[in-house]
Image (tube, rainbow, N blue to C red):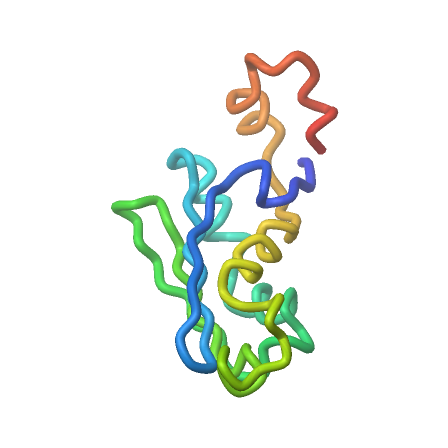
Length: 123
């Protein structure tokens, strides 16, 4: 079992509205999506953004797109136009989420990176 940053396994889209942030996390295939379902919970995302997100984190599963959508409330210090956190609007939250590490079965990684010269360099 390896611990891998989400940036090695996913793509994200993010945005913000008022004092909320929305981050969609996309898996490249079913195996990785199942890892995301197990590892990337609303509780873990809330902990990952501890100190930035003061409200609830809600996870929506979007299996037909192999995606999870997270809505984080009270995340922008009152809202984009009134916050001093101009560097921490929605898109930055997407990149920040991809720094989270998840545990992935070695067999899934071998299959995913079978054409990579040295997959251990990616851990």
